[in-house]
Image 1 (cartoon, rainbow, N blue to C red):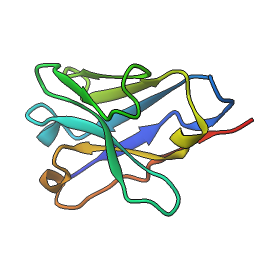
Image 2: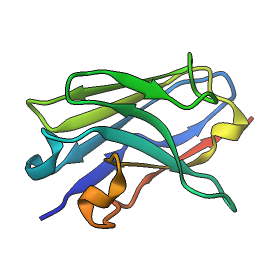
Image 3: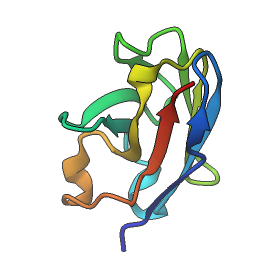
Length: 117
């Protein structure tokens, strides 16, 4: 059974911070690269950050230096610390494997992040 549960979103002013968390199924978490994706209104879903099971990280250029992804392999959780938030970071944020096809097209409910004054 696939489980992906995101939390931690909200409304924040530009320049503020948020910390997103994701709880995932143990069945695929420990062997997978995990990522945080985001989808802004009217745009395609994009991969913002990814972390391997060995803790190597990659970031989209748009978030590099502001976002930090981490994972706890003992708890099957992945976290996204977002600092210096900008209005263009407004989106629904999802966690999933990289590639997402590993979970056979399953997506959690996501968590809304809104950056606005």
